[in-house]
Length: 167
Image 1: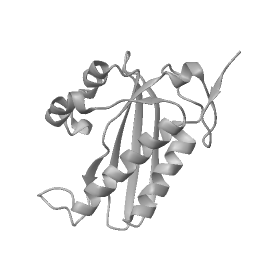
Image 2: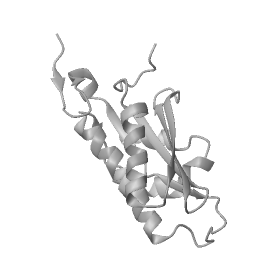
Image 3: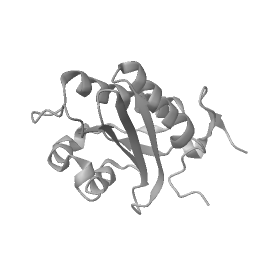
Image 4: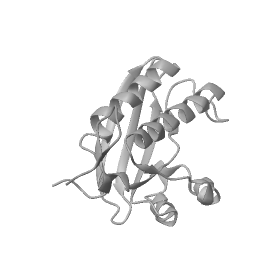
C-alpha cells in the first residue's frame, strides 16, 4: 500500500518523498553579441536565482527533500561553473547526502532568444536520468519562469523522481 503526499504537480509515494535532491544554482552562458566580460547583468543574476528557487520550490511541493547547499558553499564556488568541470559537482552532492542532483544552464543567444537547460543525475552512479531544454523568447522574469515551469512539469517530474534510472 502506497501513501501519497503532495498536491498540484501530482502525488508522490512516501518512498519517493524521502528522495534527497541537491539543486545547484542555474548558470548563465552568454553567447550573445552583448556579452559583458564582467559577467552577467544584475537582472540576469536575479533571474538565475528566481528560476533556481522555482525549481526548488516545486520539488519541495512535490514531496522531495531539497537539501541546503550552504555546508558545501566553498566547494561550490571553487568548482563553478559546473558546465566546465567534468562532473565535479557529484562529490559535492554526495557530501551533502543527495541521491539526485540537478544542474541548470541558461544560454543567452540574444536579448530575445534564450535557452534553459537542466540535467538530473543519480549521485551514486553519475548516470544522467533526465535532461531537458526549453527555448524562450524575451529576457523577462515571466519568460524565464514559463520556461522553467515547462521543464519541471514535462521533463523533471514526469514521471516522478526515484533516484534510479527508469526502466
